[in-house]
Image 1 (tube, rainbow, N blue to C red):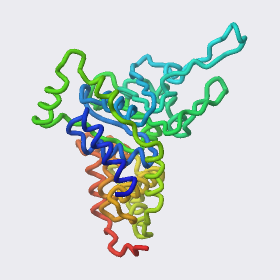
Image 2 (image 1 turned 30 degrees about the vertical axis):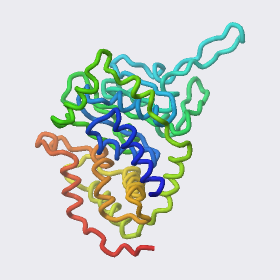
Image 3 (image 1 turned 120 degrees about the vertical axis):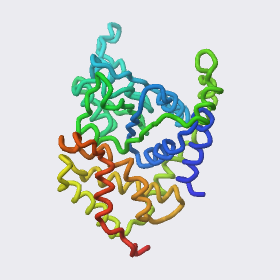
Image 4 (image 1 turned 90 degrees about the vertical axis):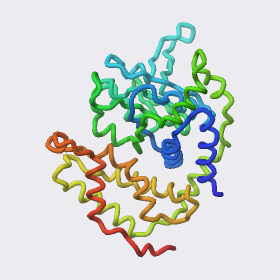
Length: 320
């Protein structure tokens, strides 16, 4: 078993002690960790997003920070502020929750556009500029943002530039009956009963993520697959029901995640099935529907699947 496959197996084994019925979510998180990208979780409140983020922070051996999205949340509530130290006679940084290794931005679409935009530099550059001073964020800085469905009251749709910074969007749905019974039996004690379980999670080996990234970097990608993804992106930009198609950053995200998917499957080359597996996670939140398409009730993934069906799947991969 290579490092990438081992990383995913550990996430399933260890996080499976505190989380139930999240196999697909954990697979997506494994890809995001190796591909070094942030994740947008979409779903109703109460599905375990905070528990998931806390558990992941413990597994990564880092600090966890939680930001609750509200309409009056200010950028300084996330980044921190400079305060004056009378003894040293200078301003010092009082860091905000963004300086943790794993950050949960809960209900991100309840914040206003100004606050949403404050996340851009942190997510894209791994650093924060505050009062003309730049501060580096921890290595492996990882944002998990939860988003309420847009038909909820008091939500602001995320800016297109903000959405494009998330490597993938994962949808959290209500659990199956058997899974929910397991959750109820484990966490029905006063206080939830999961604090000790999180503390007992054994962290990953220090170099496992970097070794997994090396596995993904060695994966071979045939030119025909680059052409396949570029063609899909081009068609999406010309689609009559899309106001905004797949950006070059989005196409790159598909390829990065496809490499990781191949590595997790213990292959040293990407196949069209790898692209088909990861594309729904990567593409759906990047496609902006026209107002007519929204009125018709058409989803972005439905349009993507229509585009995908128009493009011939490469058969000759010229495996190196």
